[in-house]
Image (cartoon, rainbow, N blue to C red):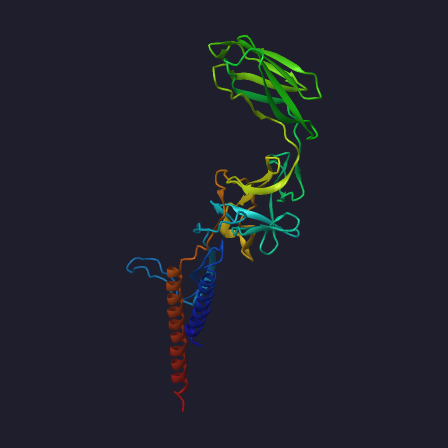
Length: 390
């Protein structure tokens, strides 16, 4: 049988593969995080009809004569170039700007993906559309354990920010120097114990000649007192007092005329709070906002990188699995060198270039037609051979 017949068949098969790959790329032009593939061809074995001959005295060397036996697919390579950004406005939609991959868990299987369309399930776990659980580092009392083992990223839906006892308070503003002697100004503020129980701290400022005396009570601890002395409206010292374990800083108070603006500006205690909302930062930290005004980190998304990402095996659903040629995953946090940063409210679009894919479609079609012509021509030659005997 003619060798060209089988060469044409191999060409049909190879270009059919190219058509399949190109068609899959075009079909996924709107798939978030999709990475296009390219088909690579190579020739097959060649049949030797004449070997090479070395040059000799009086006769030159001769080159080998070989007839190729067709074409085959050398490989199908994935293009991991960055896709364009598509703003969605949804806080749980994440895009990686860099080379990293999200780490997800499906049962006992670890799957890596670039598709960041996530949401929270009924248990507060961050999951993909098909139920894979996003992996990362957990946090304890707002501190993320970056060096620990990765686990499920979970938003504590029924969690609470712990109460914080008040240990310090700051007072600022002006005490009017033209207030009559013996006048009393009172300022109240809320402070908290270690259980988050609220109590009122009352500060009484009493005009005493050119100076002021300050008394603090909270109904629990021993009262505290201090003296404020002013020269030209400025304190001569840094006064403070202690009431029930709370140190009150009075050093920022001034004593000019007319203005009566003295107040407690802040204190460092809080009651316990329930979760009200969340946000995701560029370094992958999931921050919970609580009803007591506290913002605490509840976890951080981890990213994986590979020495040879092209060696990853596609598992479907925009996922990849590590192979012997991809190397093991290197786990890091967003923002680290070589990993990439995260953008919330944005998805990575497919990196398929439609103009290139339609060009490849034409090339594959013409290649298929040309190889089909090889087969029909070979068939005509065989027909002529069979017609030699009539």
